[in-house]
Each structure stands twice: as structure tokens, then as C-alpha cells.
Image (cartoon, rainbow, N blue to C red; front, side):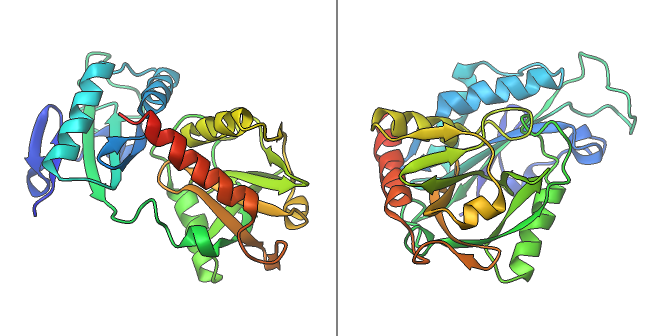
Length: 286
């Protein structure tokens, strides 16, 4: 089946969707994005993704081209047109086509480019890695300092993920000034003596939507949470480790830089948190 995508107000077969070579998202990585997961045909954490989209656009001096109601209608229509039961919807907004390449921003009235597409991922909720756990390596965090803005500047995280694969691991955790910032595309956590430890919000990390929801659910379940930086050595000595993201939900980490955590299998806290997130997020899915 040909996938239908959204481009600047039109629903098109993917092969017919075209963006100018002068679009600033292409020549300057001047754009932001969001990824919303779909389970049982419903959107998870959608209000949070819209709120972060608006914040990212504001931080870059861009307006929001659509209302919350319009964003929701587009997402729902794409789910319907593409028959998505489990999968994701990718959304991207750029500063648009300036007519040529220039470091200076184009005039404020330049139309923005809005793109959305779906990816069907059957079995998204039943990820086998939730039962086996993942292995990660550590790499220096060499990204720009505004990681709280969800921009399309993803080359270094992609390089870090490929370095992990080259070393036979699943992912990489990024380290700056001796402390873990986050994963290549996720927020990171360790568990020690039943306490969930994760870095606090700042410009150093992305303000994860799944992170926010999970910590709320964990607090409501009377779990202990401590927001502070941690080192790789501390993570290696932890009882458990895991990460969160919109499409992975909660996935356990069982090895860091070749050191197995605990028994080398997913622990009870990460396992319970994944169950808790899926149960609670589906209750409020749209």
C-alpha cells in the first residue's frame, strides 16, 4: 500500500511529496520535529508533544503554523489513511524556503514547511528488547548546548549510535564533564536500592515527554525519585538501568561499557515501569 503523507496542507502519496532544495531544514538543519507513538490506533502523550513543539518553535524564533486542533486532526487523519494500529507519526516544521542559501533568516512572512508521515510498527508495545535488555557504550557528548530544543540536528547522535553498533552494542550514552547527559535518542536512568535516579531538566538534555509522564506515574505509585547527574561508574554499580523515549517507552539496560548490571537481565523496577507507562498512557491516549 502506498503511504499517504502530509505536506503543507495536502495529503499526498509519498512519492509525490516534494520539498525545495532551498528549504532551510535541508541546507541549515533549521527545523524542529516531534515523534508521537500510536498504540491501538490512539496517540500517546499527544498534548505533551504539542506543548514541546510550541516551545521548540518559540526558542528558535519561529511561529507555530497550526492550532492544536489542526495538529490533532492531521495526526488522526494520517492514522486513518494509513491504517496505523501500532507505529509512530513523525512531524517536522522548518523555517521554510528562503529562495536561496543564506545564513540570515528569511523574512518573517516566509511560509514554513510542514511535513508529517507515519511508520507502521506492528509489535511496538511487545518489544523483545524489553525482555532481554540492551547493551550500551559511553561516548563524549559533542553536541551543541541547546539540547532542550528538539531540532533536526541529529548527525552526532546518529554517529554515536553507529559507533555503538560497530562495537557490538545497541546504543550509546553521552557523557559530558564526567556525567551522563542522555542517550542518542532517549533519557537515561539508573536504579539503586529501589530509588530511580535521572538527570534533572536543563538545557543539557531534551525534556522528554515520556520522561515526564513516567516520572509522574512513578511518583503516584510511591516510588522514590532523585533528579541529579550520575557517572558511568555509578551506573555500572547500579542495580538496574533503563531509558525512555516516545517510541521505545521504557527499555532496560543490562550492560554498560562491557560491565553487566546485576544479573545481566532486566530488573523488576524497569519491568514494572514499562508496564505502568503502557497501562497509564493508554488511559489518556487520544
